[in-house]
Length: 590
Image (cartoon, rainbow, N blue to C red; front, side, top):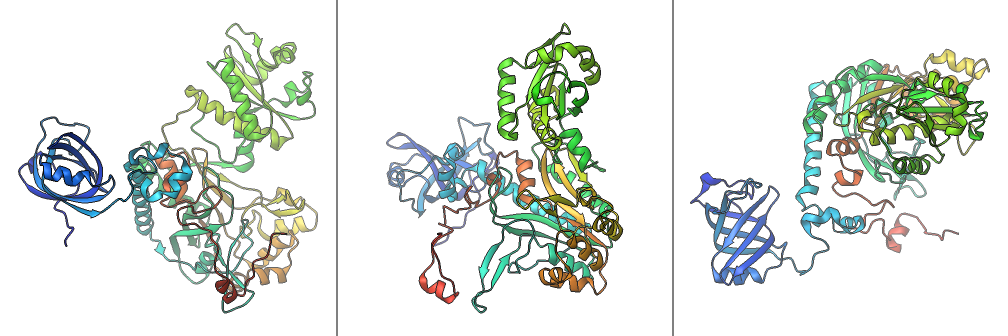
């Protein structure tokens, strides 16, 4: 039996009238008008075609076929008397001479209506993802993802990069997230790890003499889900360049990304090269975030000095940050909701007041501001009809809360946000070290393989106590678009001596470095080129391009928030024999 078709369901036009055709697809809907007249919608990957059944025998045959069964229709194309201008095939219809059942849907009731699947509960959508993907609107995201990946691949090849795949089974490495471990059957008690990123392998490629590497790399991290992060696995455009520095990496992505975003995005505008560069400390002070949305024209102002003595308790002995919004039109109800949302997201309570159209201080903490009204107006450069949002606390806390406030004010006040564009920026000069929240000790802030600004000398000065290690910055950079971090990258530390000195500050000696990173350490001892790289997240890119609310909308078969594949039943139990073969025993959590 042949199932070949003459046309797809989005192909026939008025010029095809009179042709004998064979269409195949899913029976999306059928509406019987009489005993010998019915209208059928046939859907395939490409679109839909209306089929008009005027034969009683064929209609009786179709009545026994459930929706979402696959069928073949053999018939003749004719002009529709009642055209549908909203459909590419809306000028024609097919009158069938025969219908064949190809694949029966054995259920009378579906878990959800295919064309309205996005309205269904997400758990149900993930369980029946193969039905969810039949929805053209859901499928559209996956098609776009495929086109974007192809465009990225072609652009990187055009820039002289060589696509090389790196191992999936590798060694566990302390790279910031939990590893997925794979037991080694031939080596009892030992484990492989799925790579959190191809970090070490791509650096080893540079030491091997390859000049420009890239791949659309799968990465595996056992971490919790967020709206912009999928648990389990994700994909990134991984790249590395030998004999290169920060500017070389920036130049490649500034050439590759804007045309792709402008072509495939919801908006047709994207930042052109060079992207704005913002040092980390400046980003935190000016935007309250290391992922600033530059579509918003609001910036943070320091109000510590002018408000310190106003008598309002939360401002005493704290940093105070202000976000000033001109021409403010929000209502009191909107302001209350704004403050509540900021508190939920940041964990800190914001405050506010307004300078009304008559120049009076009103609302919020107005009674504390009124006595120093002139000083505040001057310091914050206020004009009539200004709204002033305020945050307070230790400097990092005040900044982060103000960053959330700025973001929500931008979304609320349309006159302060040029939303329909892709605004890129680089965040540079990240701190090399930080104090760990759990350990309370000095730890690497980001990638431990980054080159410190100042090289060996600055590390030795920190080791001797001459300078504070927390003041050391690194050649690390993030690519940010519309408030979403697309990627982190760095100029790599390719010198074993500098590497050892960097790890000494986090209480790891030379032997520890050799033991944890033997291949990289040894390779660097054979003459490594200076090299740098980055790895923008493909899933996050496509999420931005489609305007999807969660990253799961752009992944063909995503896990749920608990890292479960409810469609396949993963993770699942295995047999006792499988465990024995792997020399593993499952013990109770106690």
